[in-house]
Image (cartoon, protein in one colour):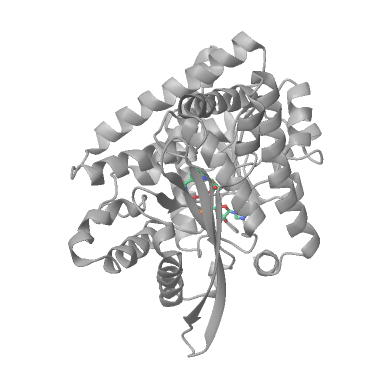
Length: 437
Ligand code: NAD
């Protein structure tokens, strides 16, 4: 645990650069190959190849010991042709302008594919949250919100949780944003963020929406291929919001969790790891799965090559690469994370006949849940959990079928299909409206 925590705090310059450069390279290569496929109008290709706005804020925060520390926060707004910018805020040492750009672009394709009235944005703060107390994290979050000021807003740019941020973070942002509005506008601005706690305008079920969507994508894929999930072995990288909930629903459907990796280590038990037991254990073990009694440690570099049927990367980008793709045993990769498979890794997997359910489809349950929360707040309603889950199911099925059919009809892989559908929708909006002035 100690070694990997140290790695988290001090990522080597070499590995950090590779991660970030790869993310931008990936998203641009994915975009260009889909743009070629649909013969995207060159003017629209130019517009979509760059971000609309990039906001960088440096802001001071008082630490518990009385000293002031300066933080750097980012918000990149890629495109808003279809509606307000939408996308998460990440707190991690690898956050910088290039990571935010790549993640913002993925959000544009994701919201478009899901048929939502949103564009794409992403941001966060470059920090290792394990180094700060809860009080410090609250002050950092509130001061970041204050620094972003009118660059976010319920009809302009709506953040949500991502790596190392959660409903508590969103509650602080909503409260700070609302507190700094003119009195008559305060309560009407609750939907400036989604993923809030359910007592503070949050949506019942938003916590599980992304993981449930990952599970549904796997289920729909199994149904299309006349397969049962019962007894299928799966591995999960990242046992946070997305990884845990995806594992929870898969296990309920009879699949067997056999290995897990988080920021602190990797564990395996081919006989099965009980999801709820591991979840409870991680809660009392500072959020880590390391030393879980009913499993053995595994070398972190071997993790993706472990024996299984389904692999769910649900942590960071660029995890499946040319280094591990040749030895991956899974026949299905369900991308819970954003950008977990790089372009070289993907080519190898596709050549080997392994299916990839791409991130912009597979993890889109989160932003669909966020859209429901936004609607709920905007209309002053309170939705019930069963209603949320039914609506989510329907939306995920529509998106999955669209991508699956496009992929079959055009003879392209599922990622290219998903990108083509997403980009065509944005192209249509530009063609209808023209370019101002
Ligand atoms: P989280 O903070 O809840 O959990 C992240 C997990 O990843 C933790 O278990 C952490 O220990 C692990 N992790 C971090 N660094 C790691 C490393 N180097 N190796 C292995 N594991 C590592 O975050 P989350 O919200 O679950 O997000 C996970 C991924 O899913 C991210 O890529 C995020 O962009 C994507 N995503 C999240 C949502 C959402 O609604 N939260 C929606 C769509 C996509």
